[in-house]
Length: 397
Image (cartoon, rainbow, N blue to C red; front, side):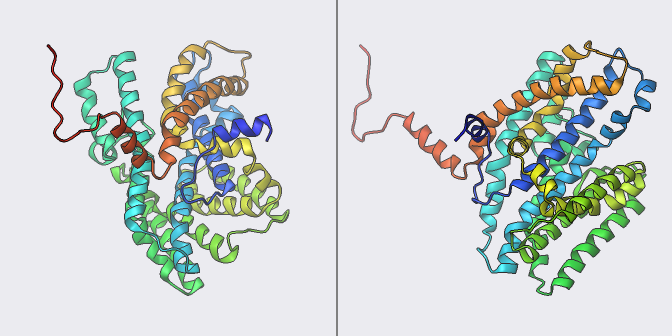
């Protein structure tokens, strides 16, 4: 094993099921990189002392990264695939039955500790660095902790703004076992017709009722359910058509390139993007699974390792960008915004990655161990002196 392999293995995530699909972590890298660049671009546009809004309005790279928020729906498709996969294997291949109690417990033990600790750390930072009022901050912290901030306040969390999408994810987790009953439909065409039809219907209804009304339901599963259903459809294809071993051909690389082009074109219109993004995301993921070059990219060991840390990066990147950019915003090399954005991406990105990697190693990765609560319980018992019946308590003279 090379030095590089040993290093990457140290930062690789743990899969409790034993099923590792490298493409998924590659997709996660694409999604988190898009979101990171979106937030960094926004930070530079708002706070840079060297560039005005006019300087960035026609910048080609800023024009691309301003649509990086599409990385969030890409995450939703991944979640639909990952959570739908064991149910698809159960119902379509006669595989191991999914224990619903274990399903919910695993979500709790895997995701909750890093999330709550991140909220507490960020709350402490707001109190110390920005001198926020604790009495004002507490209701937002409590609402965010219980994944209710979107519904209660109708806006992003003041503790960790990116947590709005995690609330959408939790709503899907709660419903996933029930939605997975779609996999019990035996006829392939009927089953996939239902998935496509429900996804399309949800998209049209959202466009009709929510697109411009400012409803807080826009930050709920109601507005994003089609992406999770498309993830279910991808799981269906992966299990039944590909038998979990997709074959690759260069023609899918052409499809991947065309899909990326269509993604960029559709981003010019919010309405068009809302209608077609779920299907372009599906096309992108299918092409990356089946292409030769595209698959080599998304399965690159460095990218999949970073993608495997995406939860930690997602929780901390917005605060890290805000903190680091305070000290790097004075760095400029030319009058070109795109070149300075690349410089800031390198510097701020590396620091953000290091902060997130430390959090991943210390907090998230231990929680990936399925039996970590039992290990923690046994360790805690070793700290308590054993009680011996009849032993007299020690006294001091």
